[in-house]
Image (cartoon, rainbow, N blue to C red):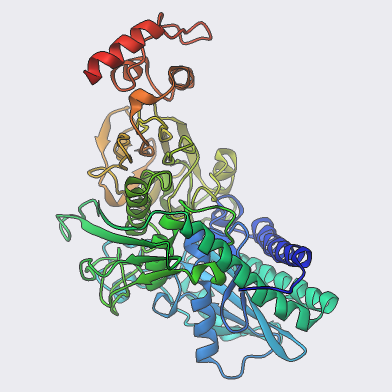
Length: 592
C-alpha cells in the first residue's frame, strides 16, 4: 500500500478528530446529571463514518467504543429516511449494543447532502426501567425478567426537536425521570457538538480532502497493525478461565475458552471463541459486541499502543463467534444484562494472560473481574429535602488492582478490565452530598496484590451505609473462588470478599451475587481483589519491595515469605533497610 496523502495533514486531521471526540466527552462529563456520568465517567464518545466504520475514539472505554459501527448499521438498516437533524436512541444488545443499560445517542452528520459521519454518545444509565432497581440483573432468566426498556435505534429527535412520545415513555417507566432526562440532554448535547465540529472540519478542508483522509487514515492504521503483528512469533495457544459459581443456577460457574492464533506472515491475528458453552439462563451472557470488544481488548492491551484503534487496524484481527454461545452471539431471549462486566472481564483477563504466557514480552496478567459492592447500584428514598424523592445510582467507590506486565507494576486505581482504568473513582464527598449515604472507609488492602517480578496492584477495602432507614444495594461479585491469576510465574491476587458490618461491629458474609438491604447503622463492605503478578517474585528488585512495604501495599511478613526479601529492622519509616546478604541467602535456599 502506498500513499500520496500529505503525512503532515494526515497527522493534523487525525488529531483534530480525536479533539472533537474529547470535546464531546467533556460536554458529557460537565453536563451529565447522574454521578454515573459526572463522577465515574461511565460513558464514551466516538465517530464512525457514514458507511459505518469506526473512525475515532480518543479516550473511549474499550467496552463501549469497539463495535460502535454495529450501532450505525442498525440505524441505517432500520431507517431509509435518515435526515439532517435526526437523532436516534439505541440500546438493543441484539442489534449491536453492549447491554441495555448503555443508552447511545446516534446523530447522522450530513455535509452537502451526504451522510459523512455519525457521532455516538454512549452512557451507562442510573436506571433503565428494569424489574428491580438496578441496571445489572445476573439472575434474570431472559430479557422479559430483566425488564429493561429497549430502543432499537429509535428516532428520538427530528429537525433537532425531541420526539415527545419516546421521552414520555422513558419518563413514565424510569425510576428517576428527571435525572434520566438530564443525562439524555447531556448525551444529545455531546453528539450535537460532534456534529457541529465535523461540519466545521469539512468546511475548512473540503469534503473531498476529508473523504480522502479517511481512507488513508484507515490504510495507515492497517499498516501500523501489520507491523506490530509482524514482530510477534507465529503460534497458536488456547487459554481458559472461569467465572465463579452462580448458585443455584450455575453451581460450576461459567468456563471461558479463548484460542489465539498469531500469523505474522499473513500479518493477522485470529481469536476463536467458538469452543464455549451455550447461553445460560441468567443475565451473564455476552452480547455479540461485548464478545468481540472484550476479547479484542485482551489482545490490544499487548500490542503497540501507537497503533490507532479504528476500522483500519481492526481489519487485521478476526474474531470467530458461535451462535447461541455465552461468549458469542446470544440467542434471543437470553439476557445480556451484565454483558459489560463479569464474564466480559473474564474474557479480557483470559485473553491477555494467554497472550502473556505464550508470547514473550506481550500481554498482561489478570486483573479485576466484577462489579461487587464497591461498584453497587444503590437505591432508596432521600428525605433530606422538603419532599421525599427516590434515588438510584451506581457507585464507583472501590477499586480493583490492575495487572502487571513484563515492564510495569499494576495500576492502583485500575478499576475494571473492560475499561482499562479509563473510568474515574467517585468523590466520597460528592457521593455523600448527592445521595443519602455515608462512606465509612476507603483504603488500600495490604497483601492483596499478585506477587511477581512486576507485581499486580493491591485492591482496596471500602465500607458504606445509609443515612436513611433503608438502602438497597445490587451487585455481582466474581473472583471469590477464582481470583485474578498471574502470568509467567506471577502469583494470584487475593480473592474478592463482600461482607456486612452490623451496627455493633459484628461482621457477617454478604451474598456474592444479589442484593443487600441495609438499615440504619449497617455497612456494606468489600475487600476488592488486586491484580495478578508477572514473573517470578524472587526476581523483584529488593528496593522495590521495600517501597511496597513502606506504601503499605505489602507487609514485612509477605515481603519475606513471598518475595524473599529480608529487612535489617522492622521500622515502617525511611529507616527501613534491606538486608541484602540475608535476602540473597533466603532466595538461594528456596530456589535450591
